[in-house]
Amino acid sequence: MNESEKYAKYKYGDNSFSVTPQEIYKIIAILLLSGYNTLPNTRLYWETKVDVQNAAISSSISRDNFLRIFRNLHFSDNNSTDETDRCRKVRPLLDHMSSKFETYAQPLPSVWSLDEAMEPYYGNHHMKQFIKGKPIRFGYKFWCLNRPDGYCIRFKIYEGREDRDPSMTLGSSVTKKLVLNFVPENSEIFLDNYFNSLPLLEEMKTNKINITGTIRIDRIEKAPLRDLKKEPRGSVHGLKEKNSNISLFRWHDNSQVTLATNRTDDLVCKVTTCSRYSGIHKRKIDVLQPSLIKEYNNGMGGVDLFDQFRGRYRINIRSRKWYWPIVRFCINASITNAWLLFRLIQPRITQLAFLREIVIPLLTTSLIPRPRGVVPRRTGNVQQDVRFDRIDHWPMKNSTQRRCARCHKCVTHKCSKCNVGLHIECFVLYHLQ
Image (cartoon, rainbow, N blue to C red; front, side, top):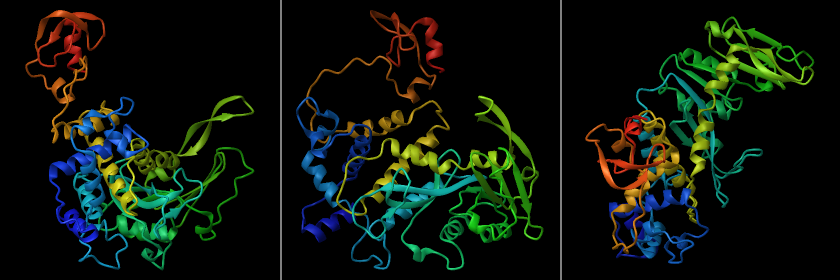
């Protein structure tokens, strides 16, 4: 709030601008709402025409006030920032979010995945990246260290190649910065061929951290791995370096897959089977597969899941400021992480339901008197914490018929607390499932 007020005076000479915490919460709620209730223009949310009218937004904050606050939204002091920091406009926000993600991830897991994530941006900025063949080709690149379920514990925005350790590849240098002095000993980290290298495996082995990942052919340092292109599907060839205990595997699936690891447990040597479709037999058959490949497939998808969840309801309101996509990444990432944490308590809640449970209360406390209107009858939309608290739920007779919230048939009974129709035989199951 203070930085936004300073920015309004510094940038636009607006000495009368002020913002309250309640208004900031409403701004965040409207931004989140734009992710699942998208309109082509921000001003349409305040239109009075029936095809685009949104009473929740228009009754909570005026359009001009929203645009004024959104224009002046700022996160750092322009007079005291480090000019050498490329992300100085949003550095306090990045540091705060990263700290909170780490705090709420305690205790730290034993299995991690490391990969890159993209936030779309099509303007002109020296940090913008282009990655051919990716779903999001233009935007800011973030290095993410995640749990296998998708929770992002640590992230770092890519600011340029000067971040790189001259003695290592860029991917290996990023891995060191994110992992060392943070990840607990004997943890398992899965990464792809962009990050993996033999020097990285050796250094992580000295720090008692296990790394498993695919590796590029030009990084295996001329190890004599056999070419399996002409051999049957499921063929495996492996090597182990005696001094460093680094193992290399090559497996023939649809194409050759080369895997490198510094693990020394029994799983490194085990071979299992997997199901693949055979064009000759016209059916699925079992083929050999190293157990480490299966372990890699199960542990590697954390960042991809995080990208998938974060992109479902990405904030749709845009800004001309170059740092707005970074702010959008932080907000969407925090909501995704919060949903993943909440699922540990309520596994059945969907991401959209969780998002709406955040947005609706933030817009409920109105700054502008709401217009009177007909309140629709609610049949089964009961908050989860009320429905399952097992306190003071009693069946009672209703004067009129309504639909049962569980089987959706006509019923003349209801729950005294949830105020939804329920048959006697549906009453217990509704409050338990």
